[in-house]
Length: 419
Image (cartoon, rainbow, N blue to C red; front, side, top):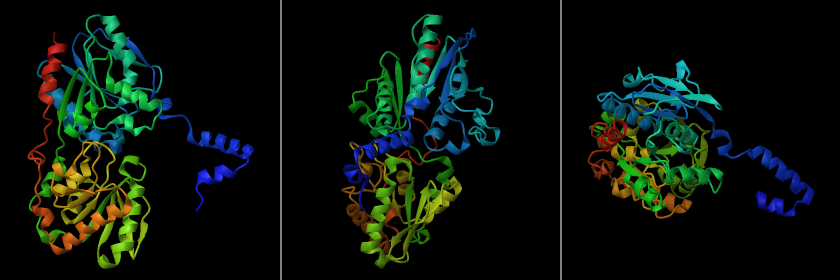
């Protein structure tokens, strides 16, 4: 098969120009063109202090993973601060549909005031003692003019901006305007940035990139409470010859097509010896894929937490990649259900430091991943209970949901908001 670079090399110049224009039209502007917005500051004379969480969306369909963690953090923080008379508000950069409301299943946020912001020129009523909690780099960027005007209008010291960091966002955008804007927001120069970082690995990586916020807080992953009950008392006999893949084709850091190629390599080399294994993908829906030697990758799409918990009880092996310093939730969940998971290291991230069931492939070449996967599959066939006996190095992971740094954030916020 001839790749596009070879085709372009032999095209005549006029055809190259046409191809270039077509590519520009199909590619469109960078993400920064669509997400950078203009909010209009309007002074709200109410003297009461308030914390504000601003999210890109409050759609229930998107309220999993990092969004769910962000809502949990805000809910608990606001409960603590409410005892001191601090109010709360949630803002969304998209409209909020009644039948697709992320807060519908959160009684603790049912009475929280909400405001949906229109794309450009929408008014953002702001009090003298409004503190904003941002969820990603562009929300942080969009709020900068509002916070600067807040300080100039009301006087006094600038209030901190809290950035909930759950991924190293500049790495999500190849060298580009979005990349440097994301870096600038994580640097926090002049913005009194307080970084609340999800995992010690991500915190260490963030600091290694030269970012130095005014304050940094760290909390560690915990298993979702809705999954926790399913992880109890799993017997070796419940485990079936099932390989679970975390499959998100359109999320580059999950390396789906590398996963596909690795599974094809495994099926070609070892699949004939394991014809009774079922290979399934959960995460985002995609077409079922033939792998060879009678094996297929069957997509289950996005499972409910109940379906996911029940499925993990019977799963024997897993394959879940995350090209990121963040430890990633699916491998941690699988490991604590007794699943032997093939995953990857990255920079300072060492998966085995979290759980003995997390096996980092020595290389991301497909044949290396396939060989590491085969070792786990053959190991299960020899000893179905091995994964259930493996030790976790996260003593608090299965305890009740708690964000360790929350009390520290609340204490420091009270000191600046009530002075």
